[in-house]
Length: 157
Image (tube, rainbow, N blue to C red; front, side, top):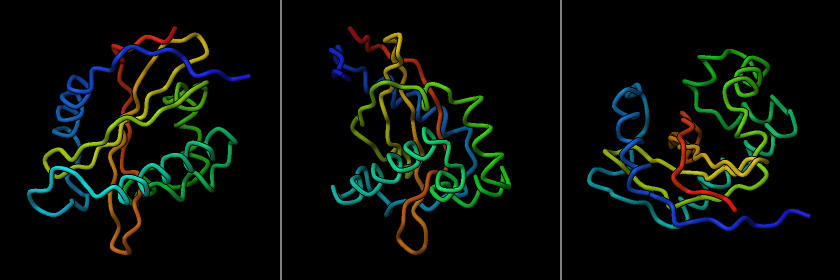
C-alpha cells in the first residue's frame, strides 16, 4: 500500500528562481503565453498536468513511443527516435521514473515561459522537483519542451 508522505512546506520561491536561471540558458524556441501573462487559466494548468502525467506513466511503463508523443518538436528533433528519448530518460532522469509518490506544485509563467513543477519522492524518501517547461503548439495542445531535476528543501517522513 502506498501512503502519502508527510512533507514540510516547499520552498517554491527558491525553485522558481532556479527555473528562471535555467530558462536563461534554454533556447528561445517556444510559444509563449500572451504578453504580460503571469499565470494561465485553470483549464490550461489542468491540460499541462495531464500531458506531464501521461508522459510519466508512459515512461514508467517503458512505452517509448507514447512518451515521445508528449515531447515538443524541438525535443523530438534532438533525440530523433522514441528509443533514444527513452534511453536518455532512463539514464538522466531516474528519479522521474522511480518516484514512489508525485505531486504537482503550483505552476508559474516566468518571462513568458510556462513552468510546471512536479515533486518527486524517491523510495528512500529523498525529494526532488522536476521543473517542466511547457510549449503550447499551434493546434492548442501542450507539449513538454524541457525538464530539469532540482533538489528540494522538502523532506519526506
